[in-house]
Length: 245
Image 1 (cartoon, rainbow, N blue to C red):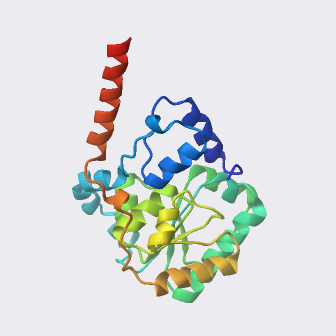
Image 2 (cartoon, rainbow, N blue to C red):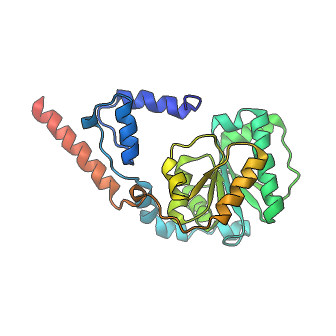
Image 3 (cartoon, helix red, strand yellow):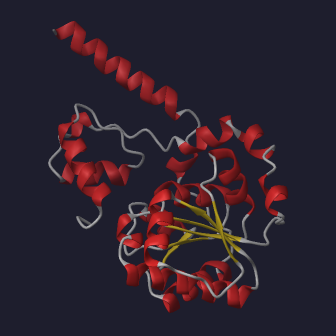
């Protein structure tokens, strides 16, 4: 989707790169379809599982839930930062109207880790929220955010990494976008794509919660030693270049 700035940047970087390390076999085929030679593309798996395991103790020891006065599985967690969602007043208003519908139905607080870009737009547009259940938080650090994410009743996001993490943690996720670069999360059942209309956001959350959490994350999301794989590929390629230079 060329309307998404990150997608334009990705194509520029991909076609300028010597080797490419996508997470999934599907991503590899997409790159090949774009004209990148097959021998420059290596599937590594997703590094986020390794990161979450490495920092699991620090995540578990976070006191953020106590600081915010919330209990496990008794709140929604939200991240929203993409330009296509927050830069247009009407779209941003629609998204927050969807959030209000969710809090009205489920009677649970909705915690929003507010990205600086989003905070600036909320201030610029002068938005006020009727629902006291919507709580705007300062940007959270990684350990605090992941702790809240892991213990959330459900998550709403436009972040790609959050889609991945929810799939791994078994937390229902609704993606507030028109497209996603993580189609494997839709296919395994961990993610519902909502768009930005208030009614669609509520219906998507209903579907996500009614569907349960019995999905199996994509195999590439559970790769145990991605950093080692990447290091071997890069070092091996570097050695070959030096040998032939």
